[in-house]
Length: 244
Image (cartoon, rainbow, N blue to C red; front, side, top):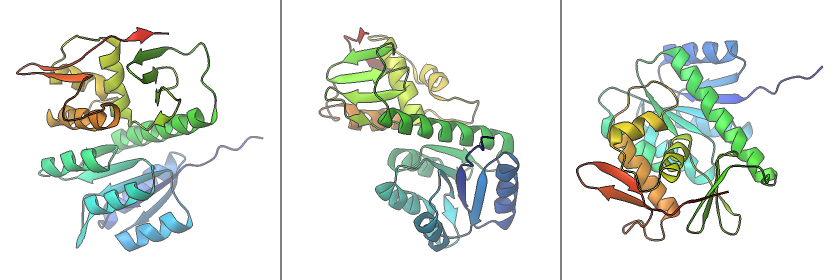
């Protein structure tokens, strides 16, 4: 009888009620859950057990959750979801830009959080499989410049075959652009295509994702040649893009 491997989710929040709610919800939905209240305990778990996903409160008691996320990101590519307050819009922008893969505002819907946890872990698992397996010839691919966007495997590679790690939102945004070169998209249109779930999002999310994509694919992010700005309207992807 095959046993499903339980994915380990580490929750870091100084609110005992939130820790209890998330631990119970994650466990009931088939995850292994560990909940701690500070950075020291977080590092102990990461260094001894590791995890498949980190859920981290932005504002811990006497600690900067954003700085903890940045420190984790320097050492690991594990998905990071940040929990933020209603008034933390700028911190959410910085979190997405510098470290986090997703965010969720408090108070949150537990079902939505679980759906996002599932999506992030699935995305991470797909990436690890992509690194280990050769690209199939029947994959849908888009080619631009020195880049290959494997739509089937959800993987971006350079011309030498070296993969580039993209978050869920970054990949969706790049796929949207590459499938419609030279078409101008408004921020609202791009938001619809980069979020896998209905969520409370804000226009600057797109600006942050584009900044991150430019840093990853542009030879000179300050003078982009692929993702261009149409002032007062939105953004567009400068072709050509070949399919294969």
